[in-house]
Amino acid sequence: MIIGLPKEIKKNEYRVAATPSAVAAFVKHGHTVLFETDCGAGAGFPDGEYQAAGGQKTPREELYRRCDMLYKVKEIEESEFDLLHEGQIVFTYLHSNAHPEMARALLARGVTAVAYEDIDDDRGGFPALAPMSVLAGKGGYIAAMWFSQTVRGGSGRLLSQVPGIPTPEIAIIGCGNSGMGAAELAAGCGNKVSMLDINWRAMERAREILPPNVELLYSDRENLVTCLKRCDVLINCINWDKTRRDHLVYREDLKLMKPGAMIVDVACDDHGAIETCESTTHADPIYYVDGILHYAVDNIPSGFAATASRTLSAATLPYALAMADKGAEQAMLEDAHLRRGLTTYKGMLTLLETAQKHNMPFTDPKDAILKG
Image (cartoon, rainbow, N blue to C red):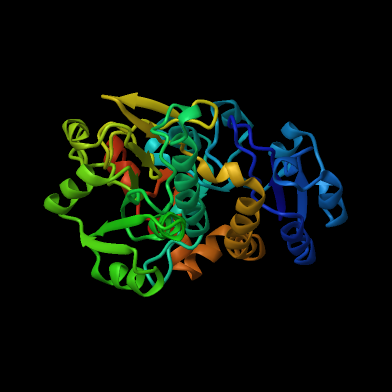
């Protein structure tokens, strides 16, 4: 199979899907890897390393035209739509429910699109998403530290325990990978940390791992309001069902928060768990609503592109190799977890969440493959 490794074109996106060592793995399995000039430069991987691993430097349009599998990081941009071809595999973070025009373009072109974020495992986790979630949580706390500085327009409070003054309070919604990443740094800096969740097992796991300055609370309205009133930073780390129209934190709730408090929304679901959330970028990361600073950058891990690329490549390579070695259809028929990532196939929409949100026809992934 021919694998295509393009340079990401989304603004402020510096990650790359495959490291040079991943390219070497494809070549060892007998596959051809085409890479675009500087595809890994932002993550610290020069073209020479890809060539040494057996990759072939290829102009962008030729790469898209020739490759059987387009292996990338972010969603397909509009400028890429006409570069795709029928039967091509696109393996990336798709978030198709948030990008309906992209989904329609993939359907129209007969692309086999597989989304990292929807591949699951036997434990109910999302192995291709987890590494980025941890980085996003940690990056979210680092952003809170940065924007709390007086010179950045913040409250001037150092989000760390300092003898002689009250300890800052950090509230985190969700004990998943993002929440644990944020809590690890926040607690390590000595803050009072409150984590809210509805999953007892997740809270038990957090209790076993995190230090005693982290309290674990059921995510009910009473506990949430208490946290809103006392926290210096609220970090949201839960994804919100795209079909829901309610919220956890409403605009009216911002009046409960202290002057100088901030909201960091790692999940970045527009008007999701946080009603006032709207996705931002690294170039323009913050905005204010009713005096409360909001940070909602939708690709936080790109700020740590070298670390992110290495962990992303390690997490997704086994699935990419399986599809390259066996063909996408056989690999997904054999692996139900990989099959759950299937979003479009031969003009059929195979991701239920996207179909429901945008009132589009849905076909079960296995049925779609067997029909095809």
